[in-house]
Length: 97
Image (cartoon, rainbow, N blue to C red; front, top):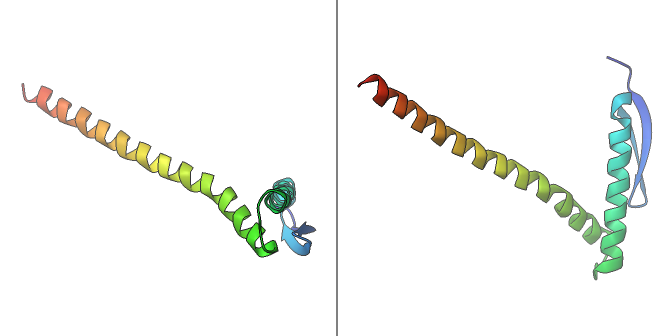
């Protein structure tokens, strides 16, 4: 594996030094850019009291789709298990004929 790279990200006017693998750099920079854009959006469009409110709203807006996807995947798994159980039951019934 390659050596870690030192980068600095600026999020909400704060500087965060990180050590990451070079192949992760683009994702980290894009994430920081998206977070900063979300913060700006919330500050311009909602009556936020301070930067902390913007960060909280940003966290919620970015995390919610991940959890929705996870829940959808879990529901699909349950449906697949039910289908497999029905197929199994049908095969058992057929083999008993």
